[in-house]
Image 1 (cartoon, rainbow, N blue to C red):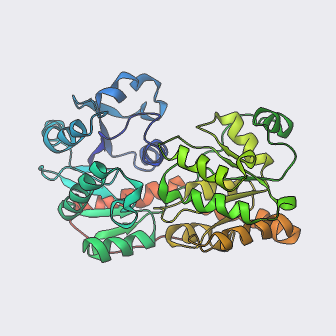
Image 2: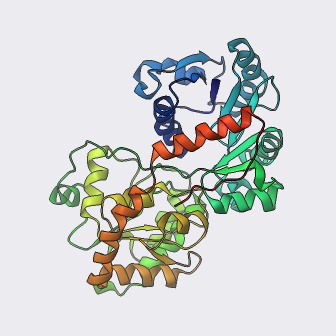
Length: 385
């Protein structure tokens, strides 16, 4: 079987979770399917740094001559050029890894849809992006032989909102990546670098986007009595939403207790995990929830939204709350910080829960999906633990 991997969307260092998905899944696919051939279709930006992407070392690549910093070029590359190049490469199947894919071509089509934020949390996207995804995702779903998604909740949403038959969907949970080899900054160094003082640290690893629900998280911290109030640290890529968050903290009088960081390096992030008393994930909607896994693997107590995929990932190894209620978020944070027995239970429960999710399992289930698609089978499976 010759598999084409649609990476036209990917700009290294700028694509977030869908980049993590490709980076972690592809080497494992090569490991579990030694008889398959893989060809990755990449854009000009990725081709320019191809040599530094170790996870593509053993994959043949074909450059699609588009620069996807312009969205229209991404669509043109995926819809017009990729099918022609895939035919020339004689692939049997094209797997599109990031929600959209080619609508035509003489090959089987497998599509991973991580979420349908464009429909359920439209504020997560700009208007042009929302409109574009609102057209391309349903069309790609309809034209695909089989769809992969990260969580049962997303399968239900695809069925309810896009009319996709459950028999055409595979639930393939994501995995926990290899632990960073970076040496964590000491807690003293972390606190000094970010001027964190001596209060407990509550960590939220998230991009500054509306559906991440950070306004309510800041409100929740403000509800904790001042003498027990933690310092909130939010590392993640910056957006136009940063200013709104900073203004909200200022209005509540807690600016000095909120740190809105951009991306931090590996040593700093490991130091923040090690120094934190709790990780909070208050998102209104997620396709999966890798930060929850990352924290649990490190033995950091987790409090997270009880909605959808986050609840699936967390199981009973996290404290769940209602994400639309600042009071519920606040109470959960205060409970983890104030109840040593609870914090210890979550700390102990996290690593075994996280270890149940592996990229090797994801790769094996993905390969099975390829085989089913090539054989024109579509039997629903659900390997979630």
